Each structure stands twice: as C-alpha cells, then as structure tokens.
Image (tube, rainbow, N blue to C red; front, side, top):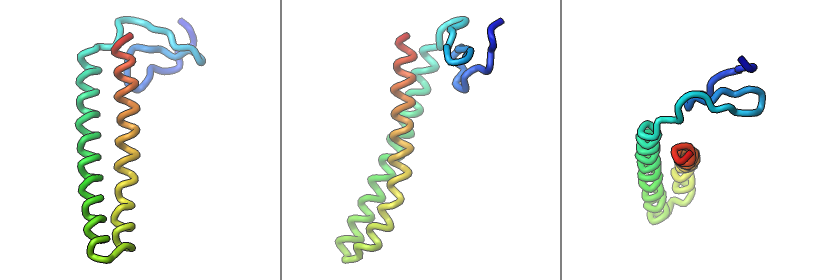
Length: 100
C-alpha cells in the first residue's frame, strides 16, 4: 500500500499519495454529482436573489436621499456574491469530474 494520507473530503474515491492522485475503485457516481450540482445551483440562485433584494433596498435609500445608508446596506451583498462565486467554482469542478 502506498503512502495513503487521506481520502478527499468529497469522497470521489481518490487516494492522495504525496502530490499525485491515484484513482481506485469505481468512478464518481454521476447521478450524485448531478444532484449536488443542482443543490449548488439552487443555493446560487438563493444568494443572488437575496443580493438583488438588498440592491433594491440600497437603491431605495439613494432615492430617498440617504446615500450613506445605501452604501451601508449594499455592503451586505459582498458575502453573498463571494459565496455564490465559490459555489459556481464547485459546480464547474463537479461538472468536469462527472465527464471523466
């Protein structure tokens, strides 16, 4: 047995040995990957919907003449967009894995 350090967290049956990944066993379950992609896409939609709601609230603050408050409200968008972007990265990775 080679120097098995740990299985990756997503458990796609890849064993890491140093810096080289070795495939062992069956490939990742494509149906499970597609389900996970669907869950991530749904969360991306939720995050972006919430970000849009916050942006509308910030726009209303500007329309009411409170630019400072608008900027403070809009700051809540940053984490939602960051999370949506990371989820999208995960979706792209899972899609590549499902095609292997």
